[in-house]
Image (cartoon, rainbow, N blue to C red; front, side, top):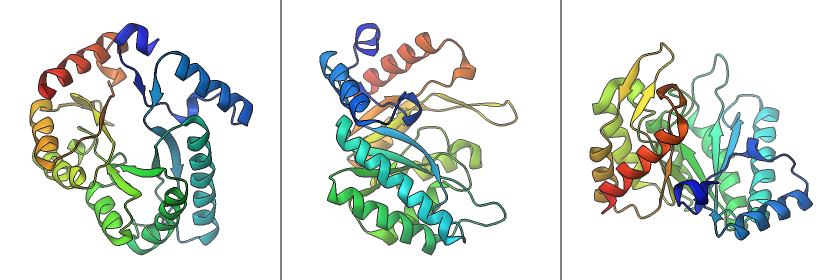
Length: 236
């Protein structure tokens, strides 16, 4: 459908899109993608407690991440987007996050699968925290995934742009394009898409841009086409 309706042949599915994690299903999924003339460019995962003070929860997060790296190999994805779950009553911990995500990045390196961190949750995935984790780990298989708008809820457009300048310096193959974000209070924040594309270009980023239309903004098909058109305009 993505190839037919939008003329886009690079897809970024989520783990939740898979009906099964059995090898036979994954092989069939990969084959159907290939038959559509498409390929997977990133695989979005759920969250894990990578900096929790409870070592068993960190180990569970690591095991979860490794499982999906194995699955990324089967379906032919060069990267996974690994989310970080906050630990109730605990502020983000740099050392524990770096230790656990560093181990995941090492596993990714052995399987030639990059682990991407997105600036999504404003606390557990604060962009400035993520960059510190990536810098501390110092593994080319742990990279940033800059989302155009998520960090605007932290401190407005200026902070969002500051965050994205840092994120794009550490990005490898994936960035999420959006032109508006609706926060938890129902307020809509408009993103200057042209300015963010300029930041990406100035950073030397050469990866993919994934269309991420906010469903609260209206029809997802029309919205996605709008983002595609905007992206192509700024990429020319």
